[in-house]
Image (cartoon, rainbow, N blue to C red):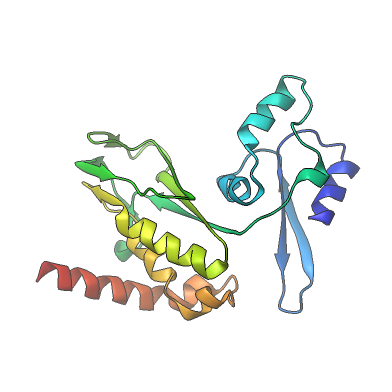
Length: 206
């Protein structure tokens, strides 16, 4: 976080933004890029920092000061976010379009679903495939993982295919649970996850 703050100060940056780094197995981190905007993942920061980033961005645009100081920010807990996309992972993530016949989202303490879905909405092929984002917070990483599993189990979307089963499967892989994974995680486990999804679908059909 200190490196990100230094980068913002050095560039005289005044707005919401995201500084991205990548970490190697030896604990060394390297700068990737800075996105001068809110990103899809911003609710994760909001959950553990207790800050409404959209509100603060609007304050900046209006010429107002931030509603807090850097020393006021205290990170608390662990947050996880999954993107709910209209696609079929079993068919090489082919886009899925149609009408939402029935929708029910997850709820509960420290569980959030940012979405535009409702019964009867048409999912078009002309826009981004993301239907929404499920975000959860727990006191520990394991608690957050368990809470996300429960949130996905509660979510019902009929009428199109989504990647929820794929996300749910990832949450059961040992390396992910331990936090011992890298950028090769998906290529390594993709076939295994697809096989697991197919087995579940075959069981449901019976």
